[in-house]
Length: 81
Image (tube, rainbow, N blue to C red; front, side):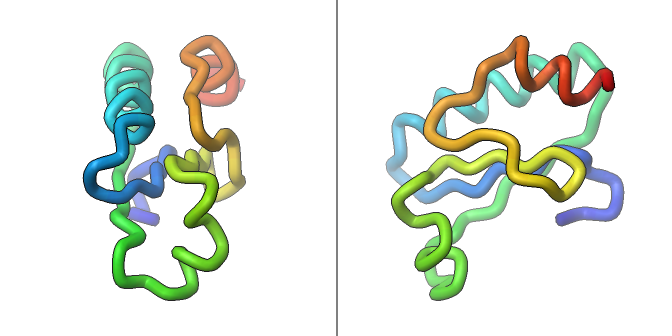
């Protein structure tokens, strides 16, 4: 994860849930002025093994936060606390 990004989302190309998660994360992080980053797991055997069935997976401050869907209110609370 980037040194400045508090939110990391693991994704893969062509994933409609990833598209939805990206939108929610972008909106919440923009609202709170929080940096976020995205990482494509394609080609990373370890990430594919660990998270391939749960994509998208969201981390906040290095801890796993959500998978499949991102709830804006839950993300907002995690970032404010």
